Length: 464
Image 1 (spheres, helix red, strand yellow):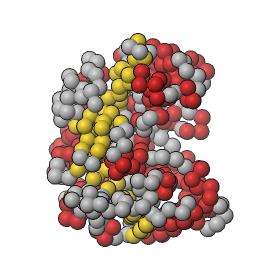
Image 2 (cartoon, rainbow, N blue to C red):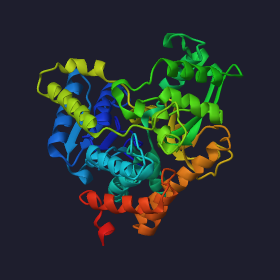
Image 3 (tube, one colour):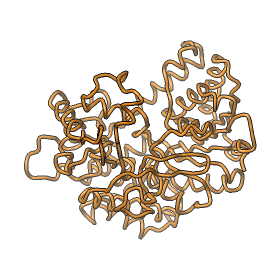
Image 4 (cartoon, rainbow, N blue to C red):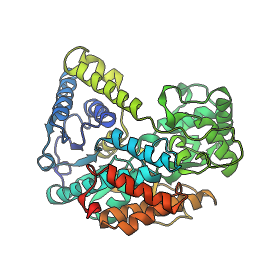
């Protein structure tokens, strides 16, 4: 039993990978903002001492500015930080910009186009090869030091890592997260697309209750299975808004490859399968239609490739913002107005406060999608409490989409098995199962080249 369950003033939340700029900055916001969390401890851990010291200093400054008693720790010692932990958030990645760039460049050389390169295709497999072994090392420490803590995976590929935790650490309480379906914003935004209301201020609790909204699927490959308002199907209204938006622009802007043509792609997939994809920025990478392999002309061009240099610039800008706060060039009083709630800490707040809010998390299906197996690892709307995760009923997965879901799950499960069991034959099988792979010879060459190029980031047993 954790100290929290024994009546501790507030929870101890340990963030492994505090140098993660996307989660790290927002976790500080929520830990300071929430009365359920700001009497506890935020323990920031990173292998880079300079970065973790900087983030811990920033957290202390924000807590002091807002007059809350949040205790902040910053350390490179993972085992020390895990003592008395109630929640452990996994949020690390080794040189992710560099290695995702390599994954995408080598894959493009052999005809596989990835706009994100971190969950499906060779990019997903190799990111798991880099991160999952470290996750399993963390699992051993958690078992030894804080076995009652909740383990929240926030590292892509979220489904592969979540499958591994579920299968190889069933004794720990865990689930996996992605911020793409962060409630309640996602539900409200889809309802705005129906045109029934024109502003978010019109989305009242009464409207929310009357909107039956159900999403399910493998992480990054999720679909809007039901969208009814007062019993009427409003999915066609949402799809029509995608069609209109696609006529007006190509999306994207300065957001890069993941955002290009998303409205047009979302609408085209809706026309084919009768359901709306809810994470188009990733889903378009899971299907083969925009890989540039067709002979006939298509109105939507092949996927653009994930932009390494732009990502470096974006990270530099975020670290500059942190530096500006820490070094006094920007008043820390602005911090709370710049950021907002984060999916992981929102859920932790909900669990600690027993608030009863629904959240989308990646977990075992357990009958939520009735025509998929109970152990299918899916992103589902769930009740998440200190006692456990319970998915709400979703809907049946339509034929066609279901087949693609099963192929993605097989790829993910084989990848998790290969990495934990250190099996090259299973790794190769995962690559050949992947929906983006079209050639055995090319797949073997991608494996060989990336294993050699990423030697500094991969476990030594792949070279024995």
